[in-house]
Length: 259
Image (cartoon, rainbow, N blue to C red; front, side):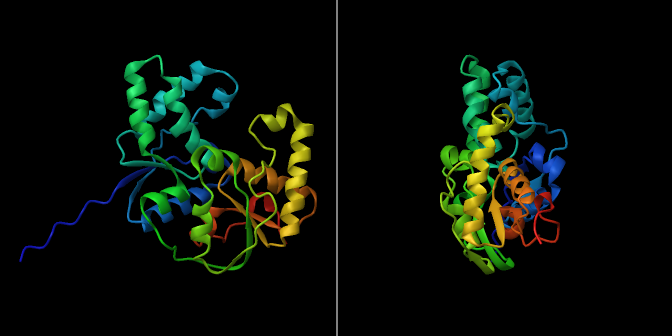
């Protein structure tokens, strides 16, 4: 009897994001491990740069289009494009096609590209149908729903589903977990007073949850909340959800917050 040929593993292009690359490489390694454990072949194109979101949000459409073309050309050959960030993932998936509505050739390419784009945790649960990760974490966590991931990509149940399967982990939901942390990219610079009030309320809810660790899926939000917690002298540690799901929590928490 002739054995059936093995199916080729899906080829995934990992869009690492600027903040992961520059501030938290451990998240990239955790993402790669999770994608590989899901049965995929991971590639990290070295020529990748920013997704263009800062320029896009500042109204610089010309530079945003230039960056978008570069990203599309670099990643369109993969079966999937995965980002450990709801914010960058939404930029690639939702806003790239909008950039090229007056350019039929690039609009078609951007739409085809957008179909392949997924945020990391939703890729694991909704595309690869991962029921459970092989990880252990002794402690309690609370989860912040980042705005872009929640509102643009519908990410909420997916991380909680996988966290529920982590041995030893206890999830303690905070109040208003779906309310903005006040980061918003350049918003926190342009409107620092408002941003400070918003993140102050967020850290109150984090503390009230009584968890050891704060998790989220976006480095911008995590750095903003971690910075505030550290300035307040909080003992709550801050990590990207991928680090816990991959069982890679040996590195120091974000911003060095924690005990």
